[in-house]
Length: 120
Image 1 (cartoon, rainbow, N blue to C red):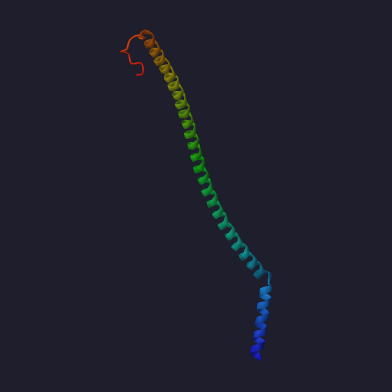
Image 2: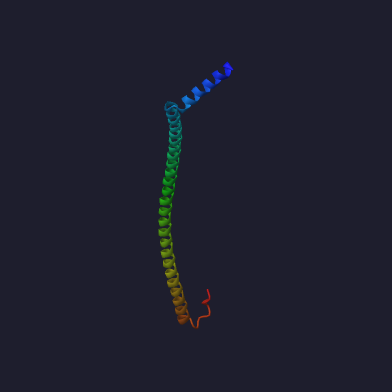
């Protein structure tokens, strides 16, 4: 019975200590510190993610700028090639017309001549 009485006293003391504002505030403080540490870790993780995404965005932006420059260069090359094609077509047309004119002149001057090959 004496042991029971001592146990009851100790349990009552423990209960009073647990209900004490000091222990409660210490527990609350420890819980807040734990939450603060978690939030700080989350903030660090978020900062790392932001830094990574920023670097990725800069890389994509640089690639996009490079591709735009390449596109402009290719467009300029295409325009130059099209202009050259038009010039070659015009020269071909002129050459064809001159060739036809020469054939016509040869026919005119060599109507009676059997030696002139007009199909060549």
